[in-house]
Length: 129
Picture (cartoon, rainbow, N blue to C red):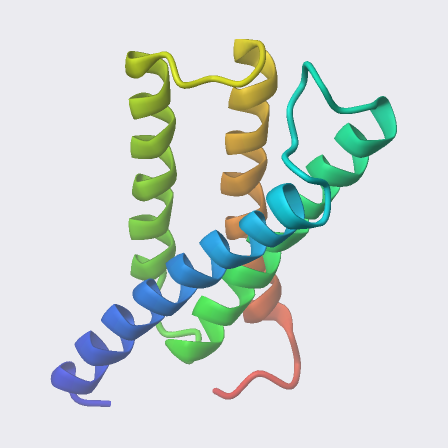
């Protein structure tokens, strides 16, 4: 694979993986659960929302890995930096909708799910080589 193609696939995977992560987390937290919040959601909604957030990140990581044909981890690294930047911005500006441990746990589950999707795509036997 030429370096130009590799760079194009990496940029495409980063954009599509990031946008799919945004789409899936918005679907799971805002649309299905009418706004996931520690203060207003029930325990069941919090469990379902946390699991849906994690699964959203796994799907986004898997999708980004398939786009780069399991070639590199740079899209996942860039999306991870975006998640850490979003978490840092929320901490500095006080944009939490719940306690610090809850919001940071959601962001850490996004990171774990993203990298689990990367690992799963590398171990998935039907992924292109």
